[in-house]
Image (cartoon, rainbow, N blue to C red; front, side, top):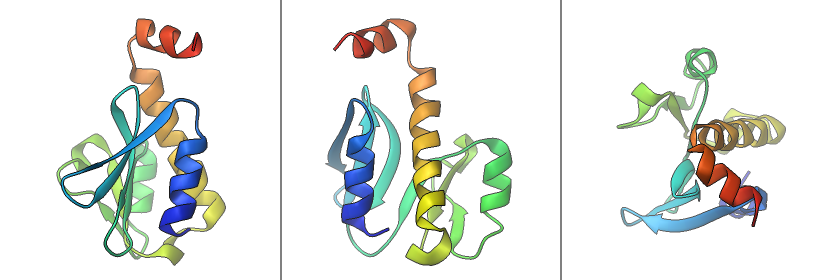
Amino acid sequence: MNLEEIRKFCLSLPHATENVQWGNDLCFKIAGKMFTVAYLEGYKVSFKCTPDEFQELILIDDIRPAEYVARYHWVTVWKPGALRKSELKRLIKDSYQMVYDKLPKKTRTNLENL
């Protein structure tokens, strides 16, 4: 997936927003909490995953623990072909869902009522 495809997919998720942070990072969020980061220079995309998937993914060439947030089970995909498009979409959607599920109940209720 290229940057525009990633952007389109992330923004298709309910209540997802985007903003540029740290100069060149396009951050996708739900209720102000990041679920995916796409880098505007070159190809890199980072997202949260389960501890088990984290261990599996970092064994794949061109996927590494994400800088600064690996302890929270975030990985960075460094090349477009490292994962199939369908797998990358699933992982991004799972990241979104993990972040959504951790939101306070009141925040989730407010989002559902929009």
